[in-house]
Image 1 (cartoon, rainbow, N blue to C red):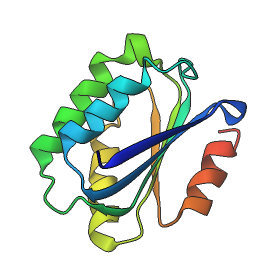
Image 2: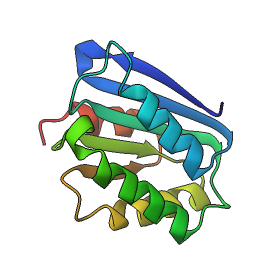
Image 3: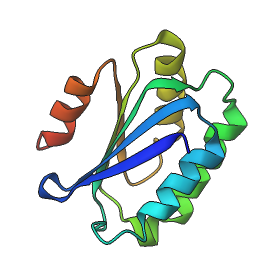
Length: 127
């Protein structure tokens, strides 16, 4: 599976690291499985590290599928949490930004960063 999930309960955070070709179905599977893991708590923040993933094949419809999934799982996943996406490559960064824009109407906050340090700093900030 191209997505590994690690919980940091002390930071109220989920860290997801993706490698290889990353498809919408992989991301949805990782998000759903998270809900049934003992360390999961509603409204935990999340960091998606897609530095080593290939998302160049994702299209707008794939991103809309992800947005709809997040919307449909708000009752189980919570609201008011933050998702940081770490994407170093230009293509990954651009696709992640498009995803963040499509999520504007959701009750969560998403930001895209060029590295994990910036993503972690934002997740840890009070905003």
